[in-house]
Image (tube, rainbow, N blue to C red; front, side, top):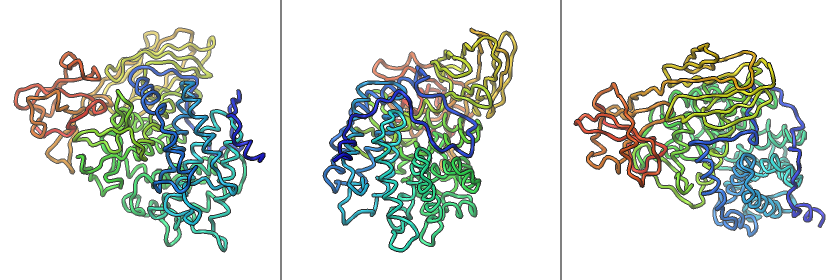
Length: 585
């Protein structure tokens, strides 16, 4: 009875956020600014607000919890949604401190914890079906959600619940006699089950229980069993995610996210190398220009990137997990190429999957076709809000003894070096004005990410001009005084991108970080399949005045078409019924 009362107690509103008890052996080279130190406005601020008001606050508690409360659940994977909600809600609440969200988050966490069985089981399966199909996967999301909740509230019941899950997993799976083989206990060559690696690393970090770390090492050994996915050995041998296991993108990326964090906590380079090889393979051979990967939920062969609706492009879960992998590598290395990929994903595929007016979410989001956003419960409808909620982790933070600015947004951040006020209409404009307010006479560098897509980037401080190189950070170090300004000018370079080899007779147009699309409703006199720019040297003109009042965004560009007519292009993130790949001129 004491345990039950403990679980049902109101969530702790601790003033002190819990800190890890185990230090990482690898020091992060980029440390994101805390959620609560930021204010984000503009496009990203609007989309985050819609994620809160249109999606998270409308959670169907009964639907996501009844599988735990009345086992078995109606779907084999129904148990993932509560944890995904808690993860998204924890980050969103840490940023917004919305009280309605806090009340809802507390309610979901309390009910989820109360459903835990006496032995620690917190799945949605009948007793005689435990540890089959997606059961370990469900426990992974229990852990991720409750650890996120613990991180922002300090509620000891959440950590206690996670400990019991961890203890049960250790007791159930392993290499000892009568223990289960975890590879046989999950889908996709065991990758679904072994992706519990990510939260088990977190659980070790917050508890210091070395048995949890040992279990993480067991999971990496299980990969290399004869019946395992051979994630490490395959990547080390082939360097190809397509040739690893069954190429299931979401599950494999989930394992790689955990492996990157295992490197951070253990310091063993053998865990980082395959992650970097996978990233290189995806970014060079399997990445859509919109910042996602996968077709029909799998990695495809080299440079095969079908973009139409029937190809089931860019599963939302994959987009978010690709972002998580880039975020892990950005933190570990401090390299701008990972921030470049985060920008590409956020301003294109992530926002494209969200209906900007309702907060509804697309499971797949084609580059040619129509978006089909849904309010329903599915893996991607639950995952995409997690990606939107992690946007503040990608924008600014600390790097190499100074402040790093990775994404350009209007807003404000407070760091230990200085307060920074950012004024910009980015991505509409490439001008950014940064006001630095440090303690008197403090010297430190400000690192400005120079996007890989721009051809010209310069920053000016007190009449001194600094030129940046695409794909690198531009450091500006000086004794800063209150009110100092950095004026940034970056060219919003227009690119015409070849669709070869998948679409050899097509091109796409990108302006700055945004992929553009030909919206059917804005180009009534055009046959979308025949529309083409006039030439390969494209000049864009502001076409916002051409937008009808009912259009939900005010960003549009005109380009001359091959037939002499004007084509109206809008950001892929805003398009509804459209083509990204246009006929080659």
